[in-house]
Length: 453
Image 1 (cartoon, rainbow, N blue to C red):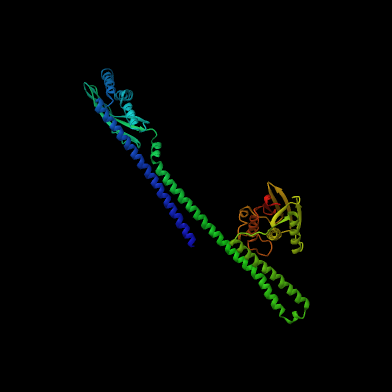
Image 2: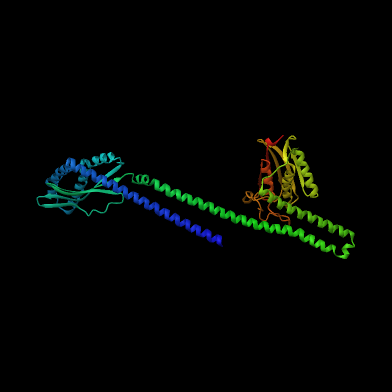
């Protein structure tokens, strides 16, 4: 329960942290964007002030002169032809469109600002926008309004440099001069790149730490479950021979049993067999505990691998009263290797024992050898129940047992395959496994040839 609460609290804290970081990214972006717009607004107005101070010009003198001639034409030629409101509206649209073109084509402020901003070592990749807010013709009869709009706030990203109002012989005009940064997002990103890198880095570090912590907690939980399973299995394994020995001892106390020599011998053999089994269990646990504390100390000797494997197979068949059919296929040409005979025998015997133990039919085992890519390969294949893919990656872990994998009543401790890999690695090699449920399992032990003599 505490672990679940800790995980829930950690996940909530992580989500809160991510939300804060996202907010910081948004805030940083907005701040950098505002600073960028203010910088260009300031530069643009400084450039306009410099133009006014040096040349006594706002850059629209020529445009105003052309517009004056254009409006003189409108007043003298087009206005007298107006008869209806529709005619006035149409003239207003034409006049505004043409005036826009005159302002864009004849103003000199933009080129001056390009040079000024560039000389200030800033990006001058921007567009200019001219928006007419009010336009009136001054006719002999009075003022004729062609455009009169309430100028709305510019959309985000547009910079209002200045609002100009000009009054000439034939017209009165008010227009706004704006700047639109073409690559504003790229410019903001460049300004905020360091901040974003730091924020992103902190997010990645926190996610990595959280991931490692989560994985460790899950691993701790898995190991705790394995430990519990191991204790349960070990308890069962130890209680079975102890219970048998206890019952057999009480049986020997009965007079009718003591008077029957055959029953006494059978009971004594049973006690001896269970005592051996109990001793093997204890030795296995002690050996694994010993191996956890220090490295293997191998007592190597040169042996012919094919002969050693043949001896191990015969010994195994004798000890289990011919419990399996074992086929031997040796193709190493009598090559000699240096191995610890005791440990090596234990490793192979464990694999043979598992092949018999996890088989729901008549066990058939193939033991073969081969030389491949500089390694001596020993393959042990069976026709047992097999192992599903989700468990293959864990079978060599200490205390791990495949769920519902026991065909026979005898429980295991989950140490056999762990012991096998430790022995293989101690000899400078490794062991791998491949399997399919219902089609058997194949173990392949590899020992480097450089250990050969």
